[in-house]
Length: 103
Image (cartoon, rainbow, N blue to C red):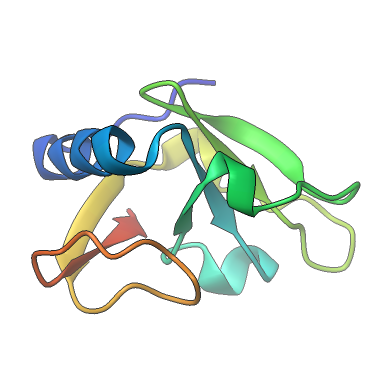
C-alpha cells in the first residue's frame, strides 16, 4: 500500500535519506501512538516477528507493532506530515523544529 506524504514531509524525508541512507518508519504501541512515527535508518532497527509492514511512503517502509497482537486499522486513511515539535523516541531529528506525524 502506498501512503501519501505532504510536500513538507516529502522534503524532510528526502533530506534525511540523503544524510542517513535508507530509512524506515515505525509505529509502536498500536493505535494510541499512530500519530507519532519514529523515522530511523534501516540499519538501526531490527524488525521483529510482531512488526507488520503497513505500507510504503515514497519507497520508505512503514512498520507497526500491533497492540495486543491485533493490527490497528490505520493504514487506509493515513498521510505522512510534519508538525511543530521534537522527534519522539529515537527518531531522527528533521532539523527544523518539526517532527513526523501521521494524519
